[in-house]
Image 1: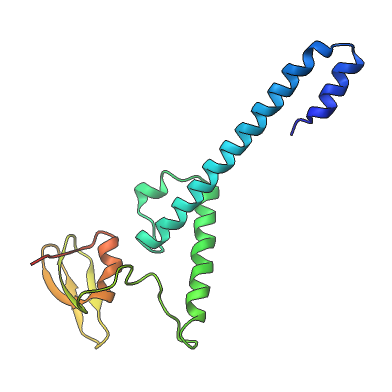
Image 2 (image 1 turned 180 degrees about the horizontal axis):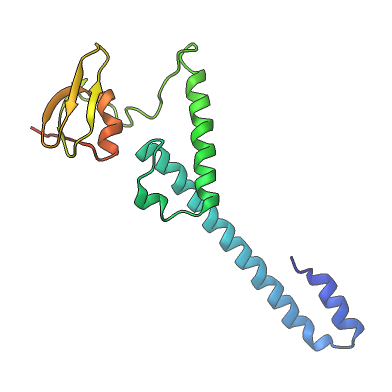
Length: 157
């Protein structure tokens, strides 16, 4: 960073005191720009953090394409930290706190598959084939991640 005081002292020593107001103005502008950039970067980090909660641990390609390498690295580290935290919850069994972002009205929901996804296993061991345009009545908490990823859609009756 440019040191305002050193620049002002240099101008004084050269007898150019007429430059001092310009130097101070430039320094104030640099500090303002620095604050604006810091606020922008902080807002961007908050948005990247929100993507983990919205899409899960795997970002869609179109979202990843809009991020630089450092942002992808930050997302990866945040994802790891969140996973470690969730594993530490629930008496050692872990707890996925990214599920049920809104309180459910019912435990089961009707969903329609928007694209072929393959086999999907639910808690009781039942394996369901998720094919495009197929409809299923499944536990909400098992479907939320796939709904956010765009694989399933909630069918409103």
